[in-house]
Image (cartoon, rainbow, N blue to C red; front, side, top):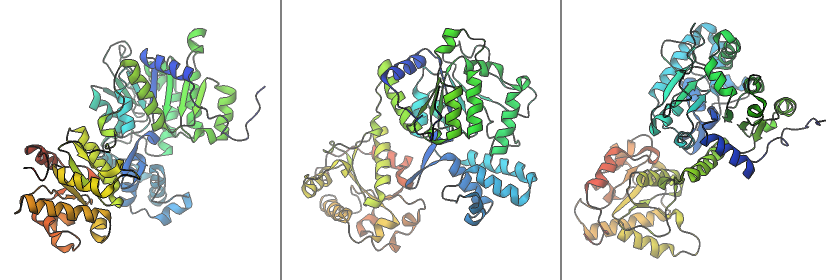
Length: 477
């Protein structure tokens, strides 16, 4: 007899080697269906990683003038707000009739967004043995990640349609036919057929429960496959619903059903006592994992890559080596701008431009001599400029700037040199009004600067660095 748990922590477990072998086997056999939720869609905003749902919520709150005071009764704030919270505040203020406008606002926010898919989504998309994915969000991040790898056919469940959109008959047998199913709708203009709040979710679930409106081939695929729920962040009732669907395997033979499992990668689930008890007594084939969904995807991607003989670690994900490569660009930054330095380094590495910054230097290294040598021998010196760094009168980066200016003027002279200042603030005020910043060396104002918000290099900068032959060093033209 099972003993009820006092907390959910005891249910969360770690994958054993045998578990990983079984899971990778399911992937290689095309018998795993991942369901992706909002907690896997974390993007970088400033110095923080937040869910894309929060990004949308914050912009909607701005458009609808929702304040911290409005959100306080819900126990949240603009710093952590979710989309459902903002929608709830606006509906309470204006009534249900504003829901049409709110859906249109959310569509416009998603449509106009320039945010790139996070690494975890791209890694999942790169596992090409998986041919069917389900998303519980209405945005396009995962679809964009899949399209960056190859072709994908998007299918959308619209609860207002009389004829539900289902998987094509040949979807699971036709090789190279990858499918992404939006189970709670996809953000589209002129419709409310996508979920932006809990009330929308409930309406979708009620429709999906009706066998008349259920996408049969999709549900058959879920029932006949191993399921991987990644960052779905479902409330207890919604998690139970989907796990109930997975357990509805009466038409499968006993051996087939016995070997199928559900994996729930969501550290919060193990702390949800009602859900824990439900899983303990009803769904013992479900494994609740204590790891973050991004970490789980990273490990899955690594193990799958080893199986198929592909390299797992992308070059842009590696940090700089202790020794600067020949002809590399030197990225100089204030410690407060370290995130932008990492982003710039990663993108340069991805597009094949050798780059270096001092992240690999450790205690015991001869900082002064090594940095001076690297400044003298880099092909281009890239100082990162922000309002924060220019306001600081002290910092090691000031020493680097001084040394680079001395070398630049000594060996190149005039207004042509090897210094390329990079403005990393989101606005371009420094670029437009460099004379107003007393902390900027005069030499920096004499050469062309580039605007790369948060360290994302512009196409103009990459083109400029590629346009000229990489010089062996500042001293050897």
